[in-house]
Image 1 (spheres, rainbow, N blue to C red):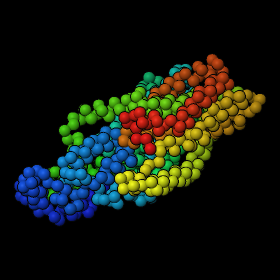
Image 2 (spheres, helix red, strand yellow):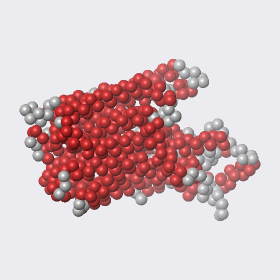
Image 3 (tube, helix red, strand yellow):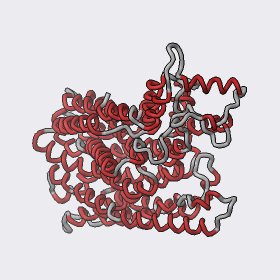
Image 4 (spheres, rainbow, N blue to C red):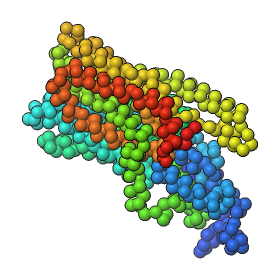
Length: 583
């Protein structure tokens, strides 16, 4: 389907495991290879109690697949099923759980394992994924700045035109828990190509829409399919880097995701003002189409179970033995497809309503997104006293983008702190290690997830500061610059909260992180979509100063959350059946 996926499939035919097995197997005319037949004979001779000593050389079934799945968060249901299959293998074949027909990586340094790819290749993927995040983020806000021109063209009020932005965000939220698990079925790469392609088609439809009703419907589906590449992106990053490297890589992606909504009005303001709102949609369709081509040509598949399935296919092709399968293939063999989907779809909602960490982080992120996306409607009212045209109002969002960029600059300091904590834990674990304490002896104790909250604890207070600053400097006698700079200030706080929250949830829920992040996406986009509709009435009823102050007071209350989890997070995790065990 896509170039890099085909190249990866062919590469597995040259892997060490496939080469060893193909040279050792002598195919029979109407049966499995001689090696496989010998193993069957051993089964009969030992009464089905063959041990791991009879394992075929090269068809290794190490422990890396489950460990990698958990450390990367490859997918909730996928990792759970791999876990169950490992337990079954352990019971059947011995204490180490090895099975010669279970296909896994060729050791921990397998070059075909995404975790072992070069940093050049990894950063290429990060930049491609970040580009997609920018595109979809820009699409969310680009039409809002051109609403005045579009309202006149469609002969409706500006309040009605707000629906096009609100419904796009609702589409984002609705899609996340339902389409997010698709990558567990066919891999991440097909999801990118298909859904991003569908996003482009619906953007073309929006540009050609003859009336507001058609436009609103098409914008919903553009948001619906635009959400999937974005929700898939976190998994792609987790596929290629571990928790330590993610400390450095994730802020780059996060900054890209927030740059989109802040740059959208800046682009749409002038584009809609000069040539019409339909060109906002044409721009997104062209930009998205270019991204589809880049992804199809240059992005490789990163989802480990999908890659191991390619390897299993090559082994089966080389040996003629259909018993070579991956852990996930085995786990799903007897599981109805509908049951798998039902389980995957239910998990985000279970975590949202049963897990305090997920619920309160989602609540905090929702407030942050209300501030960010509410600005689409609030900024024209905030800057109304300064007599700016739509294009100039759109440019004021650049200050928010600059603030978001500044928020990513402490990343090296956070990374160094994470390494120091990691080294300190390793040293202390070695000092108290005993022969019975293998985990401590190996120095593999993990850094507590609460370390991820440091950035939010340091910078989240900038959100209320920026909002109050903006609220009480929005006077014609003062000038627009204090209001513009205030947007930069709360922009720093917004991204710091996002980086800390997402990394914290990923570390806490590990195998279940995809569903937990789906919960966050669902709640914050559904409610922020509603915020688009209530922002203008709120600001017009109580005034700009008190409306911004209301958001400021609300954000002050939310600022307590990272501090509370930093202190009590370990205890809360001990109550959970899904969270990482307390460390």
